[in-house]
Image 1 (cartoon, rainbow, N blue to C red):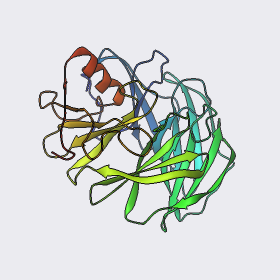
Image 2 (image 1 turned 30 degrees about the vertical axis):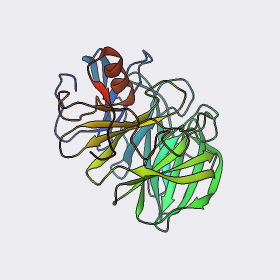
Image 3 (image 1 turned 30 degrees about the horizontal axis):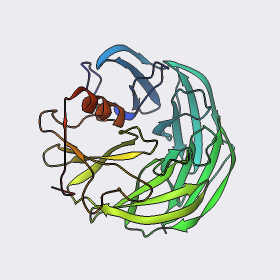
Image 4 (image 1 turned 90 degrees about the vertical axis):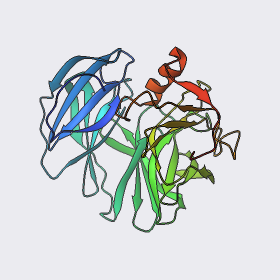
Length: 284
């Protein structure tokens, strides 16, 4: 993480590009406030608290590009309602309460472009494993609905990414047994679903993104015991060399996992030789 100080009552909402320079920035939340750190080459180049405030009953969940301008925005939720702050650097250029409302038995799952229109959408999961998706445009819900898929209550959403290269986001699930499952999506509907592999119970998802630049998202796993990093290079619902983890990134020299360990940052470390590629069994 770049050098900088922020109060202990702030937490990271997302690591994404809010400034339009193609580099990962940090978005922080504290109650109804948002702060942005802009980053260049690992160094903090700017920091600002945004000129906006939302009620304490709203929770900042994540970042995503809801207006298709290439810049990340902030998504807030409150009892089945959604609000969006559209950002340009440290400025809020548009904000509003969504026209959608979902039952309070649904919880926020993740965001991703599930219909391929270039704007982030919202995925919801209820207490019974039922899934719903909202197609978003700016602050408005313009489509979506209940999914044709449901999942066991022992699974949790771990994120989204385009695992099969069709330019639509898919869903990654994990459970307490260390298994990972993927749903290949077309809008709210599941086209294919499968268990992708088992990583072990002492690993967590650190990020999802296209690391080997083949047009498909990959999964970054981070060990909770020694901060080692393993990458699954994905091809649809499975990694292409299962039951082995694909060529993986492991390094004990890069220090504790922090927000820098985004797929983009990992890819940069691979290309620069700062971490090495080895083959490894999943979870070892």
